[in-house]
Amino acid sequence: MSGTEESSAEQPLIAHLLELRDRLLKILYGVGLVFLPLMFFAKELYAWLAQPLLSLMPVGTSMIATEVASPFFTPIKLAAMVSLVIAMPWVLYQIWAFVAPGLYKSEKRLVMPLMLSSTILFYCGIAFAYFLVMPTVFHFVIKVAPEGVSVMTDISKYLDFVLGIFIAFGLAFETPVAQVLLVKTGFVTPAKLAQNRQYVVVGVFVIAAVVTPPDVVSQIMLAVPMYLLFELGIIAARIMVPESREVERQQEQS
Image (cartoon, rainbow, N blue to C red):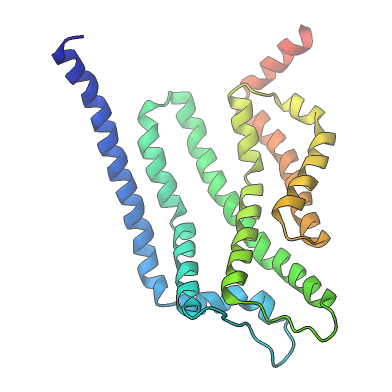
C-alpha cells in the first residue's frame, strides 16, 4: 500500500475518533448542565430519597453519618446520579447520532424505538423500585429487627443500597428490549423463547436472589415483574421483528 492510500485509510478513522470525542463532550456538557442546578438542591434530593425509610423509622430516631465528609459528598453523589438519569435521553441521542450513519435503513427504524422504549422502561423500573419495592423492603427490615435494636443506617450506605436497587430494577425492566435484540440478530426466535418459560421462571428467581437484598419480599417483587416483562418481550419481538415468523415457519417445516 502506498503512502497516499495509507493516509486516505487513516483519515476516516481519525474523523470517527474526532466525532466520538465531540459526542462524549456533548454528553458531559448535557449531564453537567443538569447537575449544576441540582447541586444546590442536593440535600432536598437526599431527603426525598430517604423518605421511604424515614417515614417508617420510630419517632426520635434518624439516619447517621459515620464519616466526616459524607454529609457533604453523599448528597452531591446523589445529585450526580440523578443528573445522569435525567439526561439519559440526551445521552442516548448522542449515541444514536454517532452510530446512525453506519446503520442500514431497516436497522435505523428499529434502533430508535428500542432506544426510546429502553429509556422509558428504565425510568419505570426506578419508579417501581422507589414507590413499591423500597417501602415494602424497609417495612420488612424494621419489623424483623431484634428487640432493642434501632434501625439507624449510615447515609452513605443507604445511598449505595438504594442505587443498587434502582440499577437492578432499571436493568430488569430492560428485558423486552434485550429479547427484541436477540430475535433481531437471529440468535433466537419468539417461539423458542416461549418454549423455555420454565427455565426463565427459575432464572428470574435466581437473578432476583443475587441482585436484591437478602429478603424474600424484594426477591419476589423483582422476579414477578421480570417474568411478566419476559412475556411482554415475546409479544414485542413478534411485532417489531416480523421476519422472525418466516424463520419459525422454516424451522417447523425442517
